[in-house]
Length: 223
Ligand SMILES: [Fe+2]
Image 1 (cartoon, rainbow, N blue to C red):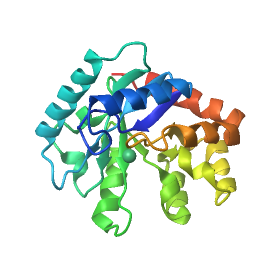
Image 2 (image 1 turned 180 degrees about the vertical axis):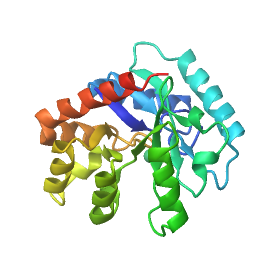
Image 3 (image 1 turned 120 degrees about the vertical axis):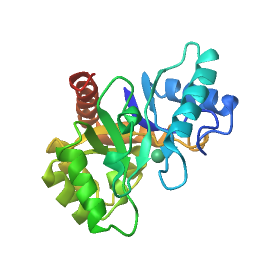
Image 4 (image 1 turned 90 degrees about the vertical axis):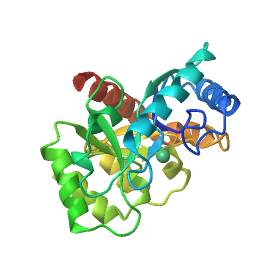
């Protein structure tokens, strides 16, 4: 099982306040049966410089690896906050999941400019990267439906299966092949992996389908 979206690097962002919290997060992941975690610290282009973010990510990952023993594999990734022109940011490919061309993009929650939509399309069509839209369950379903029909791939947060609301639509997105990843989006240690575990029960066979797709996605887009 792969947790594709998790904030577990110690003090890289607000997901973990230190190494002890990160280790607890990884232990909870292990108990839930997760074998691989993609560490996706936030990168906000508006108020963080990319080279500094990359250095911080490297440093915090190394610190975690020093004490990482018998825990799920951690691969470096990033949750990139989308802004107009992001596709032209020098070195943006370094935000991809380690060793791949797969990049997790977080869309804005409110205002979308036309230039932002153009940036998204360029990511899809011209960047040479494979964008995955983070936690599509959090947005207006009609807008997401439109993006999925354009060919974007999607990640769901496990928490969206805590309620019945919109469940049929999420199943439909999974069954149509658009959902390629499930994430805990864990910040801190509460509620840990309880929602992830619950989502597995709700998803039944669909969970295996999603995890197979995640593996395939990462394998087919290796660099
Ligand atoms: Fe996140």
